[in-house]
Length: 218
Ligand code: B1M
Image (cartoon, rainbow, N blue to C red; front, top):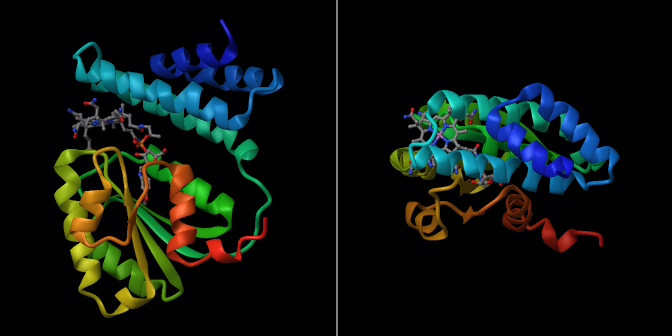
């Protein structure tokens, strides 16, 4: 079996040690870091979610898989990060109130950082009030990114965006949202400025919202 398929299994099984060595093996055999991330880890967590949905595994197994994924991202991070150090602006990013999922949010943050944004991670379970206080505390922030992974926390995302929309500082910030249950329509409906489906698209969206894409040097 190729290292990348073995890696996907190791992530699913939550085998942290094996994840580390298989990533190193995949890198040595010339696999692209992005492929390792997408096929070896993100897809694996997709399978874990499906198995959980079907009742084949339970929360403890999901926790182990998430831990293995986090370790994998840590090992892979130096290979995913470029030496791009343009400062495109400060982004505040967090997972909405009641929601503890942070793997996707962390990936989005990492990709934004890699693209040249300064990222302030507000963490998980971020209340609307904490968001307001954080934007106020960072007068140079230009973008707020919100993540939600549960259908039950979509109302918290709505509430957060509404709360931000009611603030005087709204003019200086853009708001982008994402996460598995979030859609373009929902983003529009709640008054966010944009939605992206994955971390790579989040970078494109962030640049577009801030008008940075026009200045891109190709
Ligand atoms: Co949870 N969980 N979970 N879970 N979990 C899901 C989300 C679920 C779909 C599984 C399932 O049933 N199939 C389901 C939600 C169902 C629903 O709401 N419709 C679910 C459930 C039910 C729960 C609990 C309620 C289980 C329980 O306790 N009974 C509980 C809730 C806890 C809470 O938050 N209050 C729970 C707990 C957990 C763990 C703690 C065990 C763990 C999270 C660990 C962690 O994050 N530190 C966990 C995990 C690992 C998952 C699955 C398996 C994987 C999530 C993940 O990290 N995916 C997930 C199943 C699935 O997603 N298929 C599941 C990989 C990640 C890279 O993708 O986060 O989608 P994702 O991020 C993507 C995009 O969505 C996008 O870009 C990312 C990268 O491409 N994106 C953005 C995300 N945020 C963005 C922000 C942006 C832009 C793009 O702009 C700002």
